[in-house]
Image (cartoon, rainbow, N blue to C red; front, top):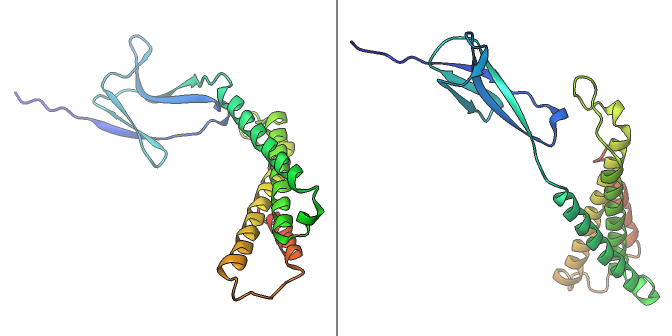
Length: 215
């Protein structure tokens, strides 16, 4: 007698459940034992594919399904606490740097100093807005578990404002880098040349251009 072991595969499309954020989802291929009315995984193999599907390969035929087992991810607030501590440290040093430079009129007359002060102010506003948004807003979902824009207008507005400030800081960093290039790498070429509107051009680029991206 020659025995043959046969198997077949079923492909299930995986669905993300936004209402289960903060949980680790385990997917397991099972079949229904009609005698005991239990879901069992004997003879079934679960394969999670990169394209977002779940393949169940079994060596017998019956009623099949993919069961979800949500397990809450225990963080005990450690990650949130560390994040707040890092934000506070960053804010403290940014404010300290601003207070050490801003009061001196002689320093404020320099182009590079004005650009750096603007960068510091933008980063401070970005950090403060991020802390306010993360601490005072919650994502609200509808009955189907979808986070609709109409239910999260405050959260979206806060995220847009926070993103705007950080994008503005990115442009100020670009202006700082370009200023260094002109003063060091292109010092001979630009010797004797001054642009009295240079800072205002940087300000226009750094405050106006970021408006496009969050919208």
